[in-house]
Length: 154
Image (cartoon, rainbow, N blue to C red; front, side):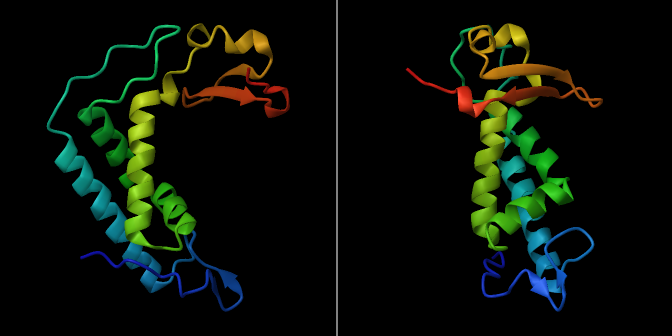
């Protein structure tokens, strides 16, 4: 059904690196299209249920995203050529493995909602010095810096 693997093909083609925008081999272009098709199929199969989840409050546990939220994340990723290529490169252009990883990522993003991080939602983490809120990007995405050297779980 989907072309499943290009693991036998190196990411170098002659003297140039392949697998990135502007330097895809014909086989890589095929797998890119197959991954996009697979993610859009996941979104279509998933989007039938659920309302938007309510906003998180400080201290709330992470809840699973709704099917509609998962489908929306999959559609966003399916329309990001560089995002799709990131998953393909991570899986040696194996479409099935890349799809599974991308779906897992979409489900995580639908549940955690990283774009909605606000200092009020992480009141315990900020004073520890491990996490620092750096404001927002021009696109409105939150910037959170994590100093892993200070991480000392109890």
